Length: 101
Image (tube, rainbow, N blue to C red; front, side, top):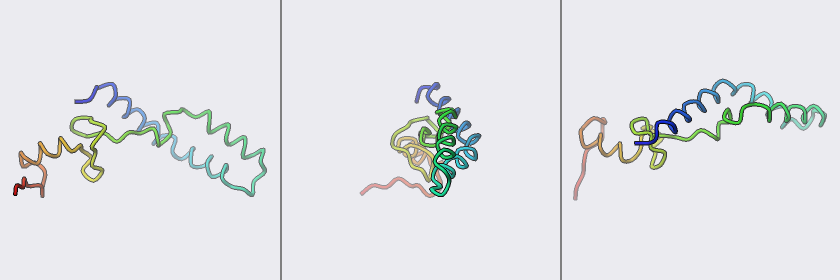
């Protein structure tokens, strides 16, 4: 089980990223538009740097929904390999059956 503080920190980052997504996209579009004057693009870059650091999407860490584990994460199932194995063995994940050969 992951530290509760790490899981809560990640939830906070997801919430901030959702809140500022539109504003960040707008500023990045201005920054990347080469037809605008450089002063206007620089002002947009300054505004972007003043936004909260945790509102950036690349600061979000994929974590297991069951245990909060950050590694061995399957995106499709939103859980770690260990939680998948445990729930699969209990028969709680549809389509997963234990195999042996």
